[in-house]
Length: 149
Image 1 (cartoon, one colour):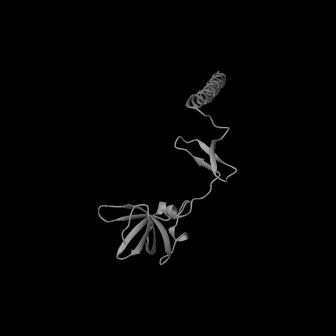
Image 2 (cartoon, rainbow, N blue to C red):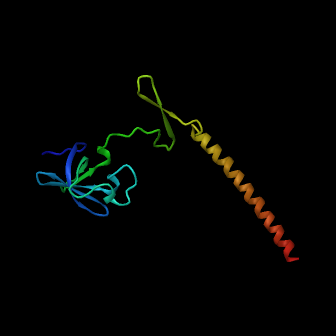
Image 3 (cartoon, rainbow, N blue to C red):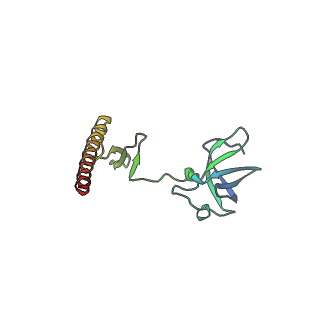
């Protein structure tokens, strides 16, 4: 069996550690699934998701020069349909169904659309917090002076 990166393969779990699981791929080949690649949700205990001798589908992530095979169970699963997504710039998107059942991603209305808007909002919030802090400091100084007299 020739493995290639991106290929979906099946294998039997032969070992479980606190950092991942080891998988027998057959024909003398084995690989490892890191704990972060076991499930889409946070994995505190791998034993909650897989057991020894389970047969699982995995995606080949990497084949090292040393022959080590890195695998992912979560990336082999069907993609989940999600209500909102994150872009690289951190803005969220909401999916809007089209009549032909495909999706268009549109930014949330409540979030700023440009860097300038984000900076303006940050400056306004910062100025408000700074003036509140100045007011509180001046009030506390007055009360300390009155108490010492």
